[in-house]
Length: 263
Image 1 (tube, helix red, strand yellow):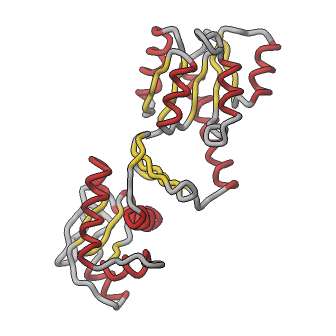
Image 2 (cartoon, rainbow, N blue to C red; image 1 turned 135 degrees about the vertical axis):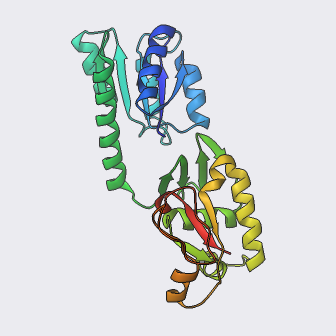
Image 3 (cartoon, rainbow, N blue to C red; image 1 turned 90 degrees about the horizontal axis):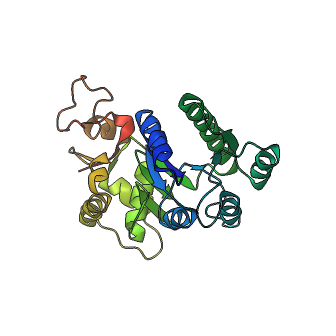
């Protein structure tokens, strides 16, 4: 679920936006001033920002300038939603780097459409800039360039080995990895990894991910060096109603939604 930060000091307007976008499937975080919004962004990831200009304290223009100076925040798409309808304000906002400008009062359907369009443009831009550093699946964001994992905006503290395991699983959703294959994929340098320690690391990752830990599915079967046998013994159906291969367990989710290893 994508998180949208709404920076709006009018509680009624903020709640109206939150209700509408919440029904559209977005997770909404409301901050009533730029200072608190900036503090939230330092600790939580968002997909886009809906920003009022006339805020208490730091105004919206100053907030945009501050974000654009921070490399870790500068790429977040910003949509200005303001009662200021003067052309000079619209031009100033867009030239500062806002993705779009909507004048109040506005249609909530139009706002949702503008937001979707901004997110599509941002996703395409991110793909053309870097396709390998960031992985995002089912509310988990893994950034290999920063060696950072976030779950629903919260940083997850993983060890180097745990990070490597999660990165491998997220890059291969639905693929089942026997323990020896996991070891072969993540082993490097002086890192000592044994078959049983893999189980310990998997348990630790699940615990640290909380409810998202259920996305890592243990598929019970026989480890094997044969790739053909591996597919038959340590894989399970891609469809909910298809029969299972003996010695396996079914996930509550479709295969494309989970990360798996064989035990």
